[in-house]
Image (tube, rainbow, N blue to C red; front, side, top):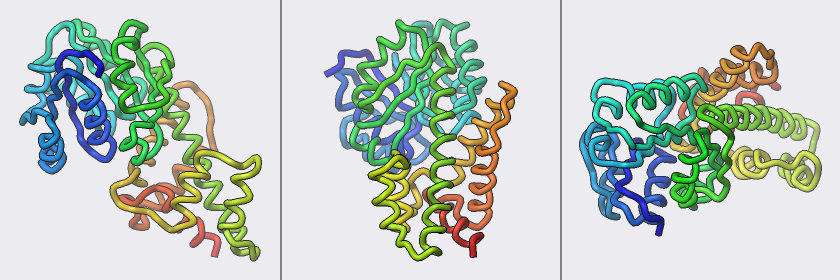
Length: 296
């Protein structure tokens, strides 16, 4: 077991709950958990977590605090808001943000935390909900080297790949570019499967052939073969609206860097139309339905 002080976890959604569970079971320290929904709190309490009713209570007791939140606005409110971590925290604490946020949000929050002697690491996660449950995520970390060495053993309970990308904000840069490429890949797969089927080749045949050739990818094997070909787009996985959020962050970063990325713009437009068609809460490879419809 990893020897730590008291741990805190805020945000027990699709990814947060299994990450919290894996870290809790791998650590010798107590785990204090908070979420606005009672169901994950009850489940984790039955496994040994201490449940509290506010962010301030987590900040008042935990030494290392993990966040797994929907996006940048929620991270800012949780850390900087009235009743948040900085209002109730203390010097020497460490905040590890597993959420996907704008790069400038991560850097701004880190500066505010540093003024109070609190360390901050952006550590967004990649891969699927099943990977979160299995503890096989990929984590991209932005922080100083000392903080990385401190949190790495805890992250290892949730991930098999942990990359120190650089200082604060670098983890978000890498995560946003990772997701940008993934979304573009899924759009390309939707187009390829649709064209192949209209041309008389079963999408399953195309998918199998691509998995053996130069078009093979994580996106093909996980989003293409397991979701798109099986028409499996559950609610509660990585939703279309979350994909729109992430690719919008990537486009904002590109604009800040004065880089034009039209392929990402195309992917966002397809995701937006997918959401407008009523699929905003479904697993984002559902965009295949829109691509197929537009090809008719």
